[in-house]
Length: 234
Ligand code: C5P
Image (tube, rainbow, N blue to C red; front, side, top):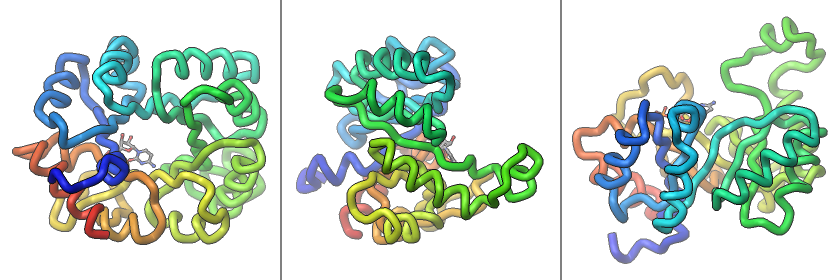
């Protein structure tokens, strides 16, 4: 494992989808130097996770704060500044032009990078129509991806299946980050469309978000090391 560069190791982001800070801290301890990048979502954030985010960044770990901001521009800008102050590396926002412009302006000059969520993967065309949208999922994803780039957002969260098409559409400048990654043989759980780490990287993903295949593994550290080795091999 020692010959793997930090840039390659950073491609694996482990989702700390755990109910308490104590559980998350135990997991981070168990993973040790095998994992350098963590995703903290709403569950852990609302369970007192923000001081833990600062602990992680002080310990030299990178943090993806998955808060999916969407509000009026002033509120989004102020929240973005607060997140930048925590030392987080990535923050998610919903891909509405106002929201993206406000967040991009607020994040400028900080180390914080913004990732836009185009259309939630739980939505299909019928859900969008019911919510009043004229476009289907595919067209709305493409439109919002282009708007994200125009707004100065750094990257997108995508399902693995969308990565290749988005890479072709957007070129190399945008970060593409994908959940729904499963090593061959791992339990798929509730994920419907999954891809192996090697394939997702070859399709053009910059970072992979992996939760249960690491955190629920009998040996989480070994599971993370195997994924990093697969990424390095890709
Ligand atoms: O455990 P698992 O590897 O499925 O976790 C994937 C992570 O990515 C979870 O934190 C989940 O909420 C997130 N995610 C996802 N699919 C999306 C968006 C986010 O699995 N479309």
